Image 1 (spheres, rainbow, N blue to C red):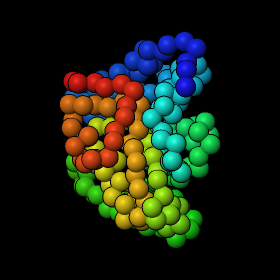
Image 2 (tube, rainbow, N blue to C red; image 1 turned 120 degrees about the vertical axis):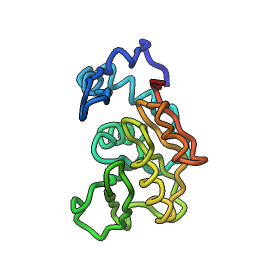
Image 3 (cartoon, rainbow, N blue to C red; image 1 turned 30 degrees about the vertical axis):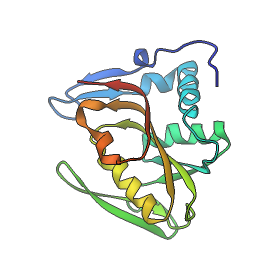
Image 4 (tube, helix red, strand yellow; image 1 turned 180 degrees about the vertical axis):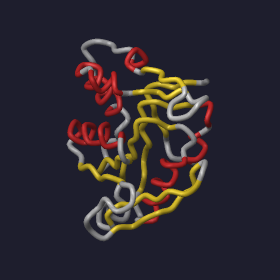
Length: 177
């Protein structure tokens, strides 16, 4: 896809120091979402990494929903949400995973993806890779073939890409510190 105008996505990511706790510099994507042209360009840029044989976009709660649903609409693919516990109404498959300070859980409808179906995993940011890795495992347990992981921002200094193994990873922006 060709963009009529080149957008510097970095101009639309705002640093919030000491959020959610002291010492963390939060990469805030809300300015990107608030600018229609930049958001559209972001989705178009992500779409360049969606293989022709992909069948569905899987978005991780919650900001992965924003990018994943828009990407699904642009590419004509379906969208599947991966949610926090207790949010999905039908029969779910779940995975528990470790956080820095405890455990968390993600769920997906058991019938959301088919065995062998080629899926794209989408989230706003790749940091340590814990949530994305857990989602990747969840999808693999259901028999899906995750052909790519797409992120708007990668915090490369946190090493999250390693947690995703051999799955191709694409991002629009990378921060090295």
